[in-house]
Every structure is written in structure tokens, then in C-alpha cells.
Length: 231
Image (cartoon, rainbow, N blue to C red; front, side, top):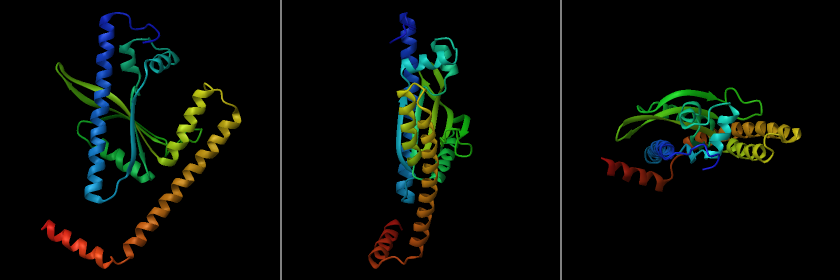
């Protein structure tokens, strides 16, 4: 542990317990997402979720963020002030999928939405588009229930590619990259947004045209046999 801000055994135990809570919250939400994915596969033959990743902020990142916001370097302040210690990123193919997944998660009885930032409706100045939710989920432990915060980011494949490069540039130059890079990034964000629109339009066309096509004999026979099996 760097920065020497956890020194006593009691504080070390508190740190381990706090990280256990955040890891448990990630596991619970990841399980919910996996169930949704499986439901879509089994029931609708469509999967709106391409990829899911999760992470816990490192102690170094936590300390830097607390300092940046002029907060006390303590576990109590960390838990109260920071919303993104535990984070989950959901990557979808198309923008409508993002809102569908966000709604499904929000409707879960044990997920409480604290705040939402819709960067599709209101993109950041640099062109970033994503959907952010800060939620709490109950973690049931021996002493009771602890509501634990998780940040959920939902975005498209194109915007995730853009965000990865933006993140790399930001940390490589510590926020002081040449101006032309930021300009190019913003242009790329606009291109990514247009790509999302075109891909969605093409997908909708494919779906509409496929619906007009009569099923092949083999497909029709298979569907009939499946119907018989379900009776």
C-alpha cells in the first residue's frame, strides 16, 4: 500500500473489509448481467450485450482522486465521496440496446439508482458519449446489510474504442496532450457517433428484409418440430 495512509492494523482490516464489499457488489451485478444475457440468448435469440468488464480502483488512483478534490485521505471519505471505486462497463452493439439494458438493471428490486448521466443526450465537450449510472446494491454480511456503490458505464463498441484511446492519451500526457490531439479525438468521436447511426440503420434494414423472406423448407420443418416438442 503506497502513500502510508493506512498505518494501524485496525485500518488495514477496515481497508480489506471495504474492498471485500466492493468486490462482492461487482460479483452481484455481474451475475445479474449474465442472467440477462442468457435470457436474451434462450428466449429472444438476440444478445444486446457484446462484452462486460469490471474493475476496482487501485489505492494509488483513489488517493490521487481524493487529493484532486481536496478530500481527506481516509477510508470513510473514500466511501462517502467517491462513486467509481467499483466499476462495471457494458459494451453494446447499438445505442437502443444501451437504454434497454439500463432500464432492465434499474428495474431490479435490489438495485437503487442514485444518479444518471446520459452522455448520448448530452455529449461531453470532447465528444464522449456513454450512459453512466451510479447505483447501490445490498451486500448481506454477518452484521447486517451494507448498501455498496457501483458505477455502471454502458456504451457502444465504437465509443468504447474511442474511449480507450482517449484514456491512453490522457494518462500518457497527464492531461496535457498537444491541442491537435484533442481536436483529432473530438473529430473521431463524431465519426464514431455517425458509425453507430449507420450501423443501427443497416441492422434495422436487415431485420426488416429478413422478416419478409419466407423460411426455407428445412427451417420450417425444424420450427414445426420444435413447436411439437414444446407442446
